[in-house]
Image (cartoon, rainbow over all chains, first blue to last red; front, side, top):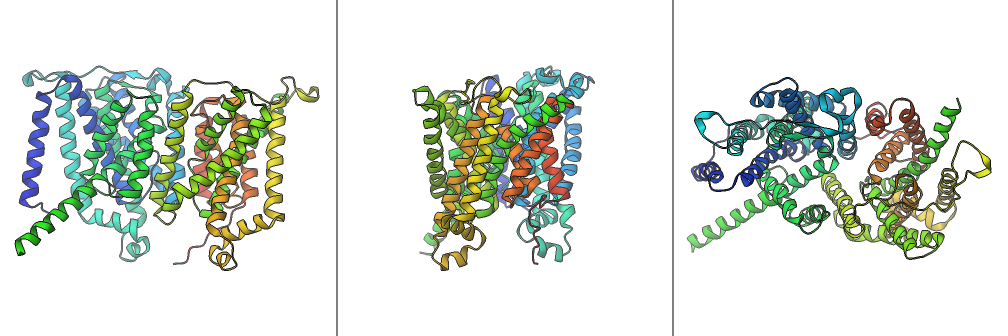
Length: 325
Length: 289
């Protein structure tokens, strides 16, 4: 594990304290929105592992989000599982689904993978509505689940409790993800993205790295889907349409490809900007997504996280320059 | 038996639409090795223009012509203004720009024309032609138009100097530039032609699927499936692939269940990419290490 310097540790601790304190100062509805931000952040980190770090384009990650959400909903509603037990199962199922989808995807590069995942994203709602699995998925109506109560000893409201539940998952998954991406496997992922042949020559098992990345990426996205389903208390096929996949991609691009902290910037954007834009017109959020995507690709391809990094480096250089003078 | 024949024939009619759109995709792919994810939404937008023109009283075929020309200009403009700057960017950046275009066209259409579903007129008589029992006259008419478009394109690329220049620019840009072909403009022309073909496909399919901003989502997917099945770098193959997918879709829809139609496209796409990535008629690419 690459150690953080003292300044970064203090910064992280401050952010964490802020994240713990914030829900006590805002209304329950805002807390609910923040919970969704956390879920999105996990999904974005998952997609970023695949697209940003490993260079495999996915236009269908909404499908894995849907699988995670449905797993949680079905386990809670039909099998009577407690909400907390469904999340790891959702992750495991999505890992398997992602790994299996990653196997044929191994043979597909760049554009072709984008096409295949595009098809997955577009077809997903229809698969979820299919009659054969209707008694589990509830067909077009979807499934309504009961919002879990906070344990008595905490004395928290349901929304605040769920927020902390998600925050715990965020902590665990981001620490794990950080270690994964900064370590040997993370470097192998980047090597496979930039120089597949050289990576192979260096002894990296390209096929394994690619499908495992697909699996882990789907796992993160599935956990996010499960958490979001528990928070929203409702799953239905049409909330997991192709536009969800585009939303996730937009979040990744805005946060910054191949960046970990970018997930939070992206998540805040895709949670709050559509809410504000919705008041102008139903089409406005999507127009904004499109324009922002193009603008970022032209002007800021490293996203907000890259911009922050750049600004900080400039500032440090200027300070160093003044010290010499 | 009659039922199957009916399904196959109406499959051929929708297949013609997929074939046109697949051809549009292949044209852009041949020139730039990119797949335009916004192709369907551009067609949808053009269809809205036609609808608006017809609403204000322009005769159908005049509106048709204006729309096709307008779509051509739109395609050239999109290439020149939006796609050009990312021409040499990594594939991820290009895909993101195309997705952005898809979303922008979709939302602009929704913004201007609202999301309510609109009926779209068909230029063909309501009663079946020649008293046949199998195909509606719109199906026959749209198939005929598709075939005419394909024929015109073939003639254009095969027998005109401009068509030759466009083929040259796609195959060997460097040498083409040396003999004085303006390669950049040839690419833009290709985009314009693709957009025009897409517009015709959109106008032809709108009476059956009805006009709304998301109408092309599924159709684009079938066009992808058709293009991949026939071979994404082979125009003839893509057309055939489009027809095959159209028939498959209709037959599967009728006998297996219509709620799996999109999944069929997914299966075809992944199946082709895994088993025979070059498609039925495409060139097999050998990468030199």
